[in-house]
Length: 313
Image (cartoon, rainbow, N blue to C red):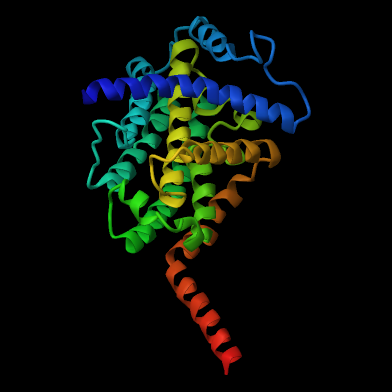
């Protein structure tokens, strides 16, 4: 029964990737004052199926100077690495809640950089090699910040189970208590998933297409699916640990859509950073604040308490 539930979740996740791309294109069309995809059937609803059919039917070619085994295996490995984290998704029936769910998430999210490294190396090209070097520094830098943010939340919740965040946030969201960490977490998962304005591993302006330059047809589609599956899951996770509450309420997915809209809005509004400033942002700004958050947190409340105490006197 659990395997059947997982298959259903993965099928709808793959469909959700297509409609997420459609939603993204529509929102970007409104932001840039132009028309998005609207020609196919009713407001472009069947556009994802057409794009998938065209992508999988594209012509591929044979590379002569590269490691062929790794070249063809890495896209499948990347898709599997993005799918295994969805085991943490709490189903309405046959719920399996891992007692070390957040630890499992951190272990699985760390594997995302490996298929980028292998993809950039196996194709034996200059631009994919530069893209994979950038991805290593970028993802490792922001994984440290995400780990520290999760560690701060563990000090508050004293639990590694995903479902415990629903019960803890029944009366107040952790976003209000850890609002600076919430903003840092949003920025970190932007960089972790190679989203604009932090998409330096896939920078089209200087790297043509980055680490996936030499991939075509079905192999490129695996990279595409794995990246967007990670994007949707990170929005889902951010909604759980910061915008929690009862899972069975109807507003659960509306909050997920709200986070998705924020990420699409960021892509359509902000230009790409410089790469050195991106690394400095992680190590010189986000990391010290995440390390010393409890100090600033208690100092802030002590200052408010002292201020009201003076006013009462």
